[in-house]
Each structure stands twice: as C-alpha cells, then as structure tokens.
Image 1 (cartoon, rainbow, N blue to C red):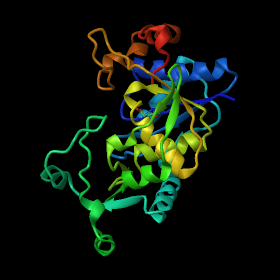
Image 2 (cartoon, rainbow, N blue to C red):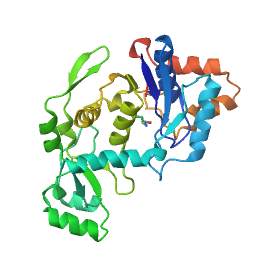
Image 3 (cartoon, helix red, strand yellow):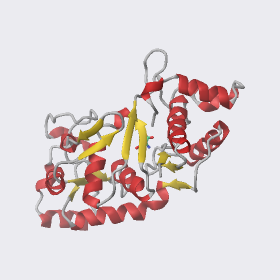
Amino acid sequence: MTVTRFAPSPTGHLHLGHAFAALTAWRRARDAGGRFLLRIEDIDRARCRPEYTADLLDDLAWLGLDWDGGTRLQSEHMGDYSAVLADLQSRALVYPCFCTRADIAAAGSAPQGPDGASVYPGICRALPPYVRTARIARGAPHAWRLDMAAATARAGALSFVEEGQGRLACAPERFGDVVLARKDAPASYHLCVTHDDAMQGITLVTRGNDLLPATGIHRLLQALMGWPAPIYAHHRLLTDASGRRLAKRDFAQTLRAMRATGMAPVQVRAAAMALSPAEMGSSG
Ligand code: GLU
C-alpha cells in the first residue's frame, strides 16, 4: 500500500509551495487507494510556534485535504529520538561535540557540503574518551555528531530509488560528521525525519529537491538502524514569477492571505498546481 506524508515545520504560515507539496503527497496516496499522513516537524522550539501548527491544520482542512489517523507532532516523541541516539552511542557511531560556532570558524577554511554549510573539521572526533566523559560530567553543552567514516564503513555502499531516475548512489560522506542531536534538543532533522518515516510506514516520500543530497544521510541512518527505505520523488522547489524560492516570510503568498482576498479553495488548489510543470510532480 502507498503511504505518503506531508511534514511541514510550523515556523510560519503555509504558502502556495506548501499547498503544492501537500496536494501532491495527498493525491499520490488517494490515487493509489493508500494512506496520507500528516506530521508536524516541530523539534526546533526556538523557531516553531503552536499557533502556526493550529493555523496550518486549519489551512489544510480549508483546502479540502483529509489525512489518515491523527497528526504526529515530533515534539511529543523526543524519547523515541533519544533512544535512537542511545543505540548509535552504544555502537560508537556518534561522538559528543563541544564546539561553538567560533571554535569551528577558528579551525580554518572547511570544504562546503552539498547543503552549502561548511563540513565540520572533526575537532571533537579525536578527543580521548576520558576528556569526553569529564566534560559531559561537568555539564559542558554538547551536540552529538555522526562519525561519518565509521558509519559509512559499517553500512557499505548505499543507494536509493528516486522515482523517474532509478537507483541513485548515496554520497553522505560529502556532508561530513552531521549533527544528530543538537545542543538544545536531543534530536535533529535528519534523525527525526528518518525515524518517523520508518515508524509511520511511509513508502513514498515526496518533497522538494533541495533535500535530494540529504537523502544519502537518511539512507545511511536507515541502514544503520535496520529501517526500510521508502521510494523518493523529489520535485523542484516552487518559485515566484521572478524565480525566487517561495518563503514563509512572503505573506502575500500565504494561504491565509489568499483566503482573505475571498479566493475559494478550488482556486488556490489550481494556483498551487499551476505553479509547477506537470512533469515535475510534487513539492515537499
Ligand atoms: N519539515 C521539512 C520541511 O518543512 C520537511 C522535510 C521532508 O519532507 O523530509 O522542509
């Protein structure tokens, strides 16, 4: 059975790009007689707001989307993510990182990862175990990073199926030692999204193609944790008439603003789908 999901982060109001993403995942599930799930990715306490969650549920319902089962809020499952982290810790696949941004900047120029962020230079990877233990014992703030070399050695060569393109090889090592648990939260996007896609039985992930390279990290975590790999269908990101990526800060593009002008749901749905060439599929 096809199981898809829409997984917005409640950091602002939904815009047409989100409507396109949600409609795509919803249509794929409904056309296949499958299930469409809704997941709120709200682990970032500083940026996510409950009122945005409430508003997005309202916007989706107004658009005419229905989802199966309840709404999963990641913030209610922190214990699950901690358990995954503990498992990786027990296998020495992650290490604590005490670095501040300034420490990392002082380490000199680092290569850029596929997401544009600089690759972590590995300062804390080499810390002896007694130093790690002592720093943690005295309460030093720390994140947990994946030991990418150890993880890829354990998992071997990996690939995933991208709809329309066939099997693509993964290259997670280009990201370096990614953060799996942040200083301020026992989880990170990569850990939560991979865990939840597995726990929710997602078989088809539709999302924006900005996340295509990161899929290698997700595939690696799936392999390390013994989770199944869904099929992926990345689509281009929606842009406005000037070619700029739609952003939550552009209020005029929000579904709220369109509703306020008296547009009907059917018109907004048509506007969202018209933003993308049909052959491109959906947006995440
Ligand atoms: N919460 C992510 C976002 O809003 C979705 C990531 C995904 O679909 O995997 O960009």
